[in-house]
Every structure is written in C-alpha cells, then in structure tokens.
Length: 195
Image 1 (cartoon, rainbow, N blue to C red):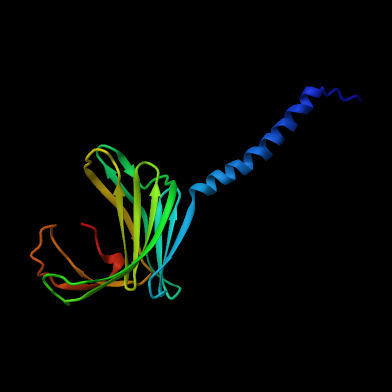
Image 2 (image 1 turned 120 degrees about the vertical axis):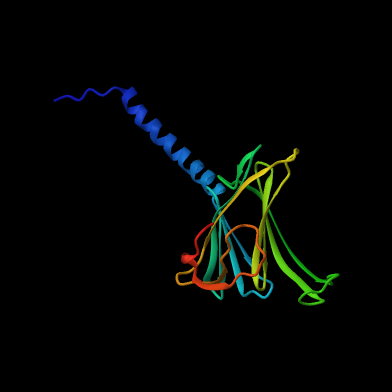
C-alpha cells in the first residue's frame, strides 16, 4: 500500500499550527488587556474595594476580609451617545488620597466633617471615566464624561449584591415624591420590592 501525500497537503497543517501558536499569545494578551481588577483600601485599611472591568464594571467590598456588599452591571445610558460601562477598556488609572476638614455653613449633625478618602479613577475609551472613593465607613462611585456636547441621561444601571440574610430598615414609599414621614420596616434585603 502506497501513501500518496503531496507536499502542499503537509504544508497547510504546519502553516495553521504556526499561525495558531503565533495568534494565541496575541489573543491572550489582548483579552487580558481588557479584563482587569483594581484594588483600593480605606484610609484605616479596614475596608477593601476590588473593581473588576472587562465586559462590564462590577465591584465588591470587604470588611476585615469578609464580603459585605457589591455591585454588578454599572452603566449609564445616554439618549445621544448610547451606553457606557459595557465592554470596558481602561486606558489609564489614577489613584490619590484626600484628607481635609470641612466646616459646613449649616451644621446639621456636626460643625466639623473630616473628609478623608482614597480615590481610584479608571479612564476609559469612549470619553468617560468611573471614579471610586473609599472612606473608613463606606464607598462611593460616579461616572464622569468628556463629551463635547450636552447629553441626556436616560438610565443608570446597577445591580447591588449583599450577603445572604442581610437585613435593612427600609422606608416603604408609594411614589418618588415623599414627605419623609414613613415608618422604617425591618426587612430581609431580598424582600424589598422594586417600585
């Protein structure tokens, strides 16, 4: 029995193998360039924030290495520009720390407020950034844009995540307009209905 294999048929699998071994590392580097995680500690080092980017933006918060809260699908939809916060590509990060004493003109709870936080800015393609701040007792985030025109925010998206059996005092309201005199009901977080 004689095998009749031409040299051209042998070259094609070799070319494909070489192409695969060349493109696979390039693809791996490209994908890993888009998906990243960023860490930030509170000024007293008790709270830890981890931000994940890639197909979207999400974060988790730990207190003494115990998960206490998180958020997924952070996004903002504009009538004119579409949605930011999807397929995130971070071009640059900026970290800074701020410590200042504020003296409010009308002191409601206190006449002096210590404003101490660490901040992480993720500067993304498509003319926006997302800024995270972590304080000793909480976190905050906001979107900032550098669009040349004014825009209309159509919707802000976020899905908050809490540990199982988390409870809250919830002021059940009937509408967005409130006289702020509702009773606060003690509920499990999953029992709080949207609306």
